[in-house]
Image (cartoon, rainbow, N blue to C red; front, side):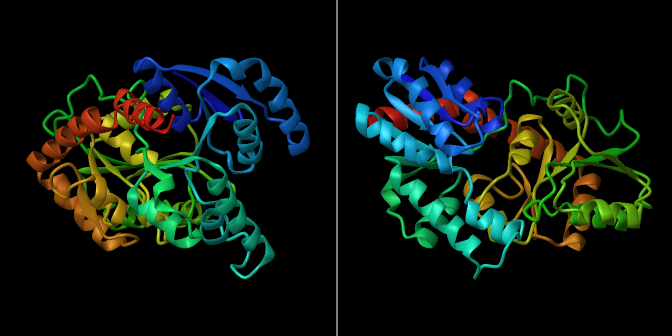
Length: 357
């Protein structure tokens, strides 16, 4: 089988990178047909020209993220050359831009545009992949789409980059327990809650907090960090991905996304899988998606969403309970190796493709 990763050139993005690596590890050939021309008419024309010499040797057109506006041309090529089109929708543009980033009112024409883009891009594909059943339920309900069109492929953490530190994480060997939070700061992540929890615990001599990330659009976490100045918090705005992976592996506890939005409750962010793959004790927001793929006090510790007081309590609880902390880290790592490794996700994807073709 040969799969064509189609649309915007995004092979370095973690979702595409994981699936490409996973497919190759499962004996699937991968080719690329991408273009980043800003004007869609020109991009569509260039994609058609690039696709023509490839069409005879491919079985599936996979529209990779971000691909909402590339599905029309993929649908056209699929019809012309009788190819299956699979769309990795990954996120709802409507939910992301209207409710997460709040770029326009829900009653605006902009909101209606994003709503229809989400709906039509999914309708045009033969199959649509999403990361959780909770996320699938959102799309089925919000956009009135047939459930049979969707298939779950979890996100994963890319163990080729994110892996356990070679150094033992023993409280006896370290002066402090390191608690980290990383990611792009948006309302879905709720990084401001982590800053507030760090401020509450700044007088605890056994804790150190690492905040890693930034955003040009959502400044609340950075503004709070500058305002509160937690004494035991270190901040890095951006790190190269390899440096980020090394930094994460040095921590003991990782905090997942905790934002207040609907989107935050139906998906698991990459950062949570990074923690599992790096053998960290994960504190995960208690929501539909977490309950679907994780188990409280078995491979993570649940915390109430967007609640700095509960987060502070859970951090103290894990910091004091070294046996539980190490058990969660080990169980989470084993879970990732078994269910969310690149090879496993590639196997799930290959199974989907075989059934579809």
